[in-house]
Image 1: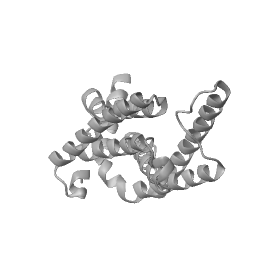
Image 2 (image 1 turned 180 degrees about the vertical axis):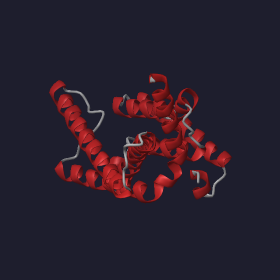
Image 3 (image 1 turned 45 degrees about the horizontal axis):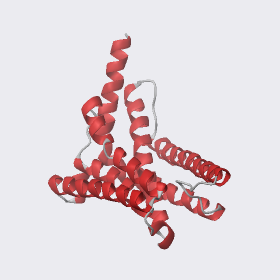
Image 4 (image 1 turned 60 degrees about the horizontal axis):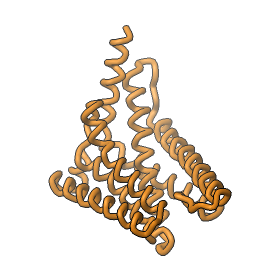
Length: 215
């Protein structure tokens, strides 16, 4: 089952929404430049670049990225960039939403990778419960690393007198971020993995091809 089947939205409409958000990211980039706000500009620019990742994966690595998966990625980076315009500061739940959504993507990447390894290596057997726990631990570990990066960037900005590109709002906020990261991982582990079969199959095929080349 593909993401588009679950959403009950046509592939054409999903692509239109994706393109609209990509254009909006360019707009946010220019807003950041106009305001002289480096944080807005950098976050929007990086988010825009990330929207090209699905096309690169499909073109260069033959990993199928249907319109729904592309939309999933684009929504995550778009909402993050949009948040730098004010919602992160003015809407109490916005940061929680973006963390959960971003974590769901990290969980999807971790799941696809570990399933491909399970499929490729005959000597590796990973029970569903192990995969579920792995996804949670993978996302939590990634979340901790991200929080450390935010703290480091904030510290360097304070030392050098600049404005932090990423902002950390204290220990309580960090704990909430990790909690919603876990929530996003659980959602993917329970309901999102069915939409990743094509990606898992493509990764397995690449591992198989690499193994044959090595032989």
